Image (cartoon, rainbow, N blue to C red; front, side, top):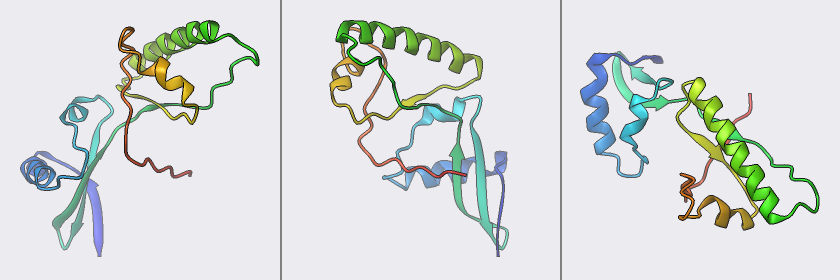
Length: 131
């Protein structure tokens, strides 16, 4: 039978070793400094077999721009929206805002290097589980 417990200081070295030996795990060391980061250890017969960390994120849902809005007005509205969302995330201790979008026309806005909005495009599958 397996059990799950919260990680403690005694797990730090083994977790670090396992993270380094798993090249496809998308390891981001900054995450472990996030205020909402927690780590769980799965054990079999009191021996760790899997360790994973998780943290809260702000996930933007579907945008609803006014039909016929100009690209300039939409860009200005998005700027205002992002500034407010960053403010709200910071107040909650959240360090990442995620935005899923199928509209490729938003790529230019989000990834515009001249305005450095801070977004990065993730190029791996993301899965959702609804409770």
